[in-house]
Image (cartoon, one colour):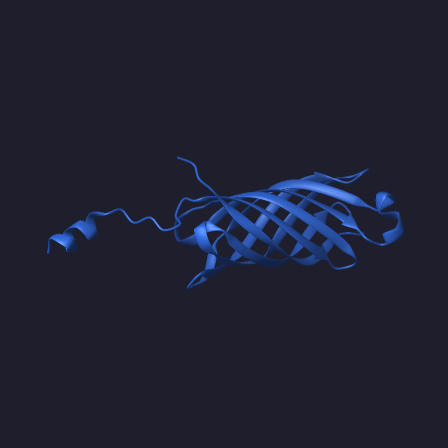
Length: 157
């Protein structure tokens, strides 16, 4: 009985309110590559907020990478957990961003899916897929893509 009482009074806090720094690489339809650096704050039941900075580059002409179309952006995304299983979970990803290209201002609306796999010591591997609606650029209005990345735990005490 004493052991049961002691174990029931111990505060168990799995991964709620944890923070992670992550990096991801991906690609978009019509020959574009992207990189993302983000900070993720996980709330209850794997729901999370993500604050990110991303950049992308068109790969139309591989020989002249320095002159290709490039853009960058910063934004935030809400990631409610939709699917949970042992050592993995899936989240919808809904976000907005602001950014710029060499001559234009860009605003983005992002929607997609992120699937994360828990590894040892709080690290996570993830893949994601989604669509970005970029305004006001008409030639790059819809960007459909996918990416992979890693999340590293941050210990804040």
